[in-house]
Image (cartoon, rainbow, N blue to C red):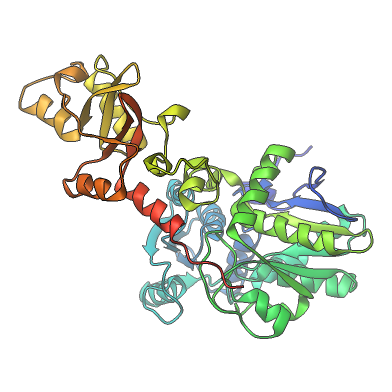
Length: 460
């Protein structure tokens, strides 16, 4: 096997694998593992294609700045390419993107400009409009504009589509894609429209995106919100040719996350949230068929970018995607029950350094102090600061030397008004059943519970 001389040479030629653990009806379902690209996603392909096209046209020159609006993965692909080719990279990213993606981009040398995810086109903080404006203000820069750049779908027309055709030994009946910029579904659709017109192009779209209705009815659907990252839009991207698509499926966040989590457990494939949407849409298509078909969809990126979200049980609980046993009392509001060994606590004999490190690790400001599962005190950042600075203590001193020894507790049988009384005094609710510690409830925990309990019913 010949060694590559540059990481960019390893983009593409990703593996194909058949899934076995899902109900695919009469069909066979195959996944093209685009998470095996060096940047971890399918977006490496158009990133390289768009930059090389800009170089060939003279739109970018040595020492120039690449500017792009991205949900993360195109940014990572561009960071990979920019670093290898010597360009500065400025990315405008909506603030709903996962921290893993942002940390990844910063580690690769990209400059990040976070902007609002709750505004639409025409607003000055809308991520695409902001990126375009920054490009106009930055000398020797190139606005990559994946949403309007013809080199985006070209990467899939000349690369991804032909690879699928060869890997499936010309036995393909349908390909299921999502639309972020629209490059993937357009490029693959153009290839198969020319090479094998019988192949159906299917769209899997998050509920809340306007695109599925555009395909199925010819009119954009009502705009909503969704948590899946990287696909779904509030407009029809310029490079997206939806006339190539024969049918679209709407997929809820819950369906997408459940599909991706099952894919990891049963097939060993760590896929991202958009891949869950595509998988759920592909399964819906497969189960509707009356005869055997070979269906291909994509693992668009790696799930390692979503470990703090859809692969985090506590985040899933907070969002209402995982149900837990209901007790009908304040135990239902505890995000991390002590009975599950999920709570973060300390003991009187721990050092102040230990207590502080736990606060920093879990991003919390106070810890219940326990002895044999009973609350004997509480310690917060101000207690540690006071002990170190005012009392001239050291971090090896015991927690017992600095903790408050009369913590206020709340019985599990108490009502919400009792919690509010605690919160108004700027305290965290320590919930107990008699002497036994059950867990803590923060303001965020209460807000998450209220959001779940008072969530409006979906329209019929």
